[in-house]
Length: 392
Ligand SMILES: *Cc1c(COP(=O)(O)O)cnc(C)c1O
Image 1 (tube, protein in one colour):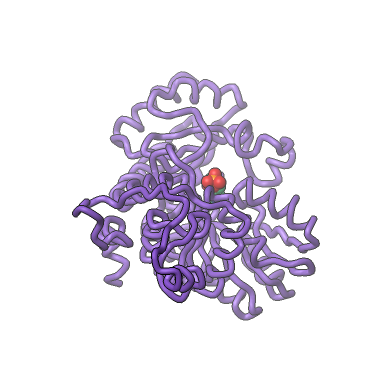
Image 2 (tube, helix red, strand yellow):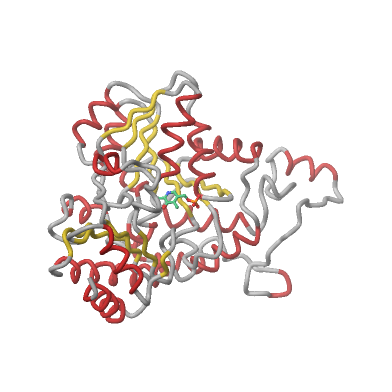
């Protein structure tokens, strides 16, 4: 697939081929809230969408629009729109597409915030939510075939890197006339393109790999035009708009997306392989390892396996504290997908609100450490882990 291989060019030029004022080679940050027209009938045409242009920055903005175009090109979508955060992208998408009486089928392992939308907010709107066991594709299929409006999942999942078969679930969703939505935050369009596997919509937290530097938040939705247009309309009215400066920062970060992902993929695989043979490590969760439960599906649908992994230690939580506190090249912080390595235990971060038993039911060991491998030198990351594990 040649288009697939030109992503190094698309991350740089996609959406940014136009000429800018004064010959500037960088897209200006248009802070303007509103856009003026001398010709009132032209203003009217733009406001009604009969002519291209911008009217008010809650709706569209000339710095934000190229970002939407870049992700559209990278993901092979028909249309894209943007949001102030990843959760705004996800919640606006679900609230646009679901109405009282509808049913949505999803998985237990969605991102914490998305899971809250499913268990707390959607039921309040009288939407029936079915949370399936993430790795039991037969059970998910059966639930989809009982009828639903939306099938929502992510792959790889957080924090145990489970893999969901995108093509299989998109097919069964379509057989039911349902919309298939994939959160592609972990993989990015460099490693995985759900739209080309049949998904209708892809959602992103641009806060993570897309921006890549942990210094700005944003969200994106890309896919079928009829659906994105409806989601855009919901967002332009309810107002979770991306700031032009944030859009600029994400566009800047995305220019190195392919280069960064190459290193993230390499470091993720190297660190996972190292940990898998370490005597103090109990289990390693990484889709690139041949021992991973769904490695074959990961291999089929991903170009690289990413920089996210998790591992558990033999023994209790004290050992996790020892390892974390002795790591030099790792921020002990929430979030992921940054140039710098980030580590944290799900027990006190993403899954702190669950009881020990609920974590066990979700397949999350108490001594699990989530590791977002950055783009540092891989030898340094492994040497750092080695000395920290030595102290256990
Ligand atoms: C972080 C994250 C989100 C939420 O994104 P925000 O930008 O923090 O709102 C959604 N999905 C996944 C997989 C994430 O990692």
